[in-house]
Length: 376
Image (tube, rainbow, N blue to C red; front, side):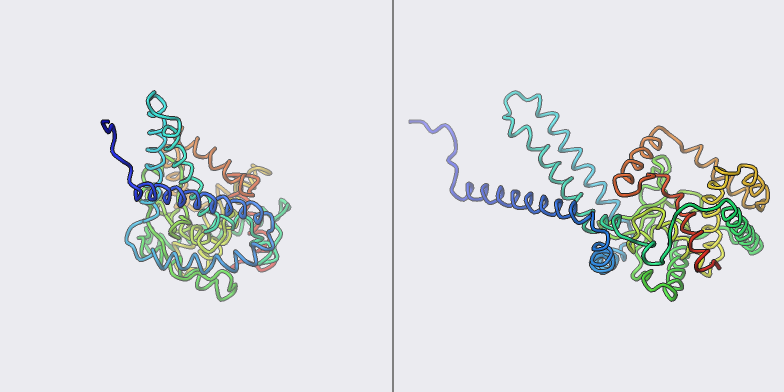
């Protein structure tokens, strides 16, 4: 009798069985962890105590120590690899759908692989950072309430910020100091956190890991200025945006690194740290950004008052805002519109009910802080 195929060895069968067992065990473990994330996310007190002030600080510092020394953004590389791998598996799935000779088990294999990768990314993301969305945060730590505020309070804040912005711009122009290189920017941001830590120990930042994003120019069209990579602990900064915006972005991403996932809280902590930096350019960047938020809030309730504040801006500040407006206009595409909607949905799914507009809630934090602690 003729043998029509190669015999399957016992070792090969054991290897196949062992491989399936490993994949099944991994799937079960990921599903259990996903359920844990789902149930624990509702217990904000537990997360604040045991995760945000327990497990996470040590983990994030370890990641910054592990990857911060690299001269490039490892997180950007990993994101690229994952994206290509998932797209490759989905492509294989589509191609195999049209192969009549393939079994359905073989056709679905790439789809299952892509699903496993995405499940792993989901679990890793929330365990290594994302649970910070469900902490108590600044409200509990500083005893602040971000609620409704009176128009006069908003006007007073605009006046304060206008004064700070104009004075910092004047100093920068007198010193002919208008551009911040990366090393100086990262060091100045770190100094701000070190000073702030003396007043609020829970805002401690150790072991810096800040990198220019590899996707800077692409990011201009996608619409991001920076982001935190929870897989490597790196703070990514888009250094292709106007330079006067970058210092505040750095401080914002550092706030994400130390556990403030909420965009309004990261804005607030970034503002506090930047204004505690001895670097005038760093201060200018933060006061300008905060003025734009408060100015926008005022425009919504009193456009006449907002217009008057706009007219009082230093000519140098007006030039910066004109450059920023042109930058946004030149890079606005359907892609940035689409990513804005996607990110808006993402934020709403992570306890930020106003979505992308939640960035602007920083005005409420600044007003509450100013009322209780005062501003520099």
